[in-house]
Amino acid sequence: MNRRYTHHAVKLIVVVGLLAAFSGCETLRSLISVERPEVRVEGAELTALSFDGAEVTVELTIDNPNPIGISMSGFSYELLIEGNRFLDGDISEAIQIDAMDSSSLKVPVAFGFRDLVDTVQSLGDAEEAAYEVNLTLRFDLPVLGPISVPVQADGTFPVVRVPTVRLKAVHLDSLSLAGADMRLELAVRNPNTFDLSINSLSYEFAVEGKPWVSGTAPRRQSVAAKQESVLSLPFTLRFLSLGRTVRTILLGQNSLQYELDLATVVGTDLALIPSVDLPFSVSGTVPLRR
Image (tube, rainbow, N blue to C red; front, side, top):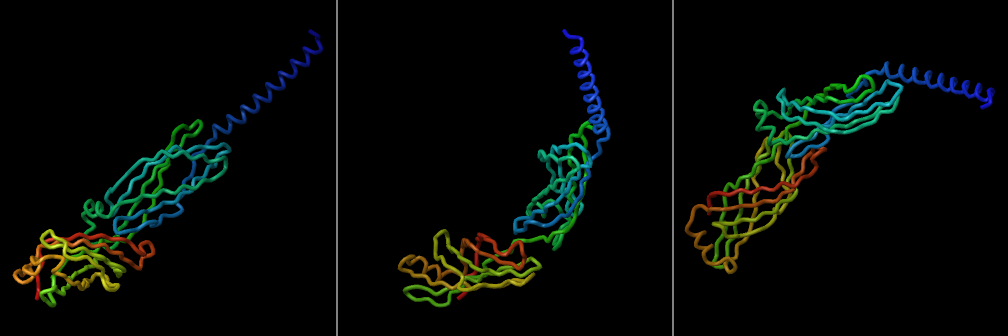
């Protein structure tokens, strides 16, 4: 091999080696100075609300102060209501945050009111409840390895309760050989701090296991906050289609063994519950008033 060629090859190898070493030192220096990411809570808000439950969403910003990208592998969460641990969970969600960059993360936490009232005894008849969401984010960082960053958000939410329905009485307004004009006297109680509107209502009414009538409410009804309203549902029975037994019952009994199924559309002035379908099913013994 030519001596001159060999000399140039050696010089090239040395230069490449020095560049690689220099680059390696810079990379190592970057890795050694890796910093923990900063996680900020930008806000927590009520993003869903119904008669069944609610959803709180916590919005986070993750800042990466490092000259290299980092990754989040997941997070765990814990929900406390009125200081009581209500639910928790763990989510595996990979997020890459570029060097010297930020990333947003929204964490929705949903819960049911029925379980809430059963679990948090101190809630009682409270109209509002305080919540706290504790989050722990997991990161895999060069040099530092796996680390956890905890954050916390809190706020309040309205406790929404399903209205109650009961059949107070069945009224017999008139009776003839052909049929009867009658009314269902239905009481609807609103346990909430906001007004309700019953935008539509349809029903099926049965006595002693036999269907008697189905129909709809004649008009829209309102139920004020913390109040009870009585709805009148008029209907007519035709004995020709139902049989003579019905007339005998109306003449001889002072109470009826009944089943009543209702399908209602209820509205509120809450932005998150403008309108909702609520079914009801009640049964028992009801007075027959003449």
